[in-house]
Length: 411
Image (tube, rainbow, N blue to C red):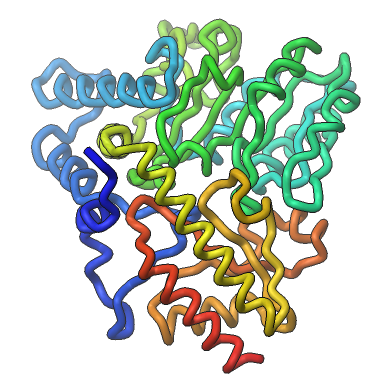
């Protein structure tokens, strides 16, 4: 079916609401995307008809819940192009997945081992590794960032050394929108005997993936950024690597046998899903991924590019009268559909407040959990407008008119 923005937007009931008497213009999808009505209905239907724990019962509801949960795992595997559903671990989100990986891989790391990150990482792909450094004495090294907000790949070859155990970087920046050439990174990283983890929290929302083509060893993303519920995410890992990993958490349903002296662990993915997993949330995530996969993806990508170009062109026009700095790749260059910008002399929180109170526009202002990157650019924060499948040209028009209003009031 040809992509129809109005038809897609109509599937998101929340967009019909008004805020302060004004229509809602939701441009904060990089923080949390809205859910189509079919996802909300799938979550409610699961809890209405087969709410029960998985793996722990032989009664009908438990069996149905277990089937729904494993079907969700299979759907997630299809979406990311995993070779085996057993490579998909359900987590609480991307942050939880990175912490799980850090705690598991960290058990085999020691002083002298190196982990390579970049200067543009979200705090979720920085703080867990800093904590591992405190526990195990590993060394953290950082790929620099170019002036247009991309990871500087020219430094990769000299920073990946024989001591590098893991390269953990963003697949797409939540601040600059810059995309990483994962295949090129993977080739060099693997040639040096290291492993690659990609933080796909932003990139995963823009269409099905292919883990084989990406070349990563581990991949994480969150449900609430891909039109699904909060409280669920995916950590994918190559099967042979997961089989060698020790669990990060212990508890029920991740064990084979338990005595007072020791426990034996189940094979992946179950050894990494201690306790009760996010069952209903996984069902919602699977519905969201199926919904997204059913769209005209080429049409969706074109729509996102056109709106991003419209937004950037509009900000550039306004910037002729009041200096506006736009972070990331130039207009027309490949990027995620998000734009972070600053207005000289005006705090981003003030802009976001006026946009909400006077125009019904939902933006995000601040460091976007990437303070080191803002420090690098000499900024105390930025405003970020982030788009999704339900974003319309009219939303961008209102945002740009609102920016004129903000500058008139605050300038």
